[in-house]
Image 1 (cartoon, rainbow, N blue to C red):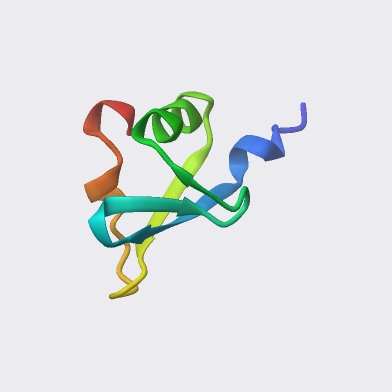
Image 2: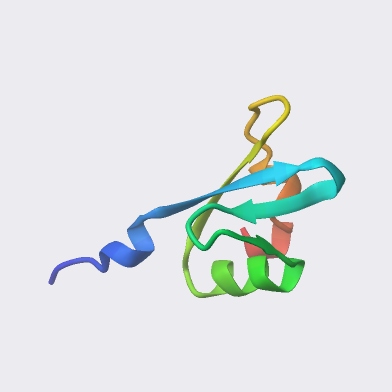
Length: 66
């Protein structure tokens, strides 16, 4: 059986000031509900702070969705 590649990919998001999340793939800002929907669908998320370049995924993704 071939694994589903769609779920193996990581969606790289950018966090701007005010905790705004931007998805370069869709060219849109995400609301918290959008982020939760992606995670529940099995999309892996990676979030980087635009100002510092640091990985802030653990700060953005709620513990119950990790």
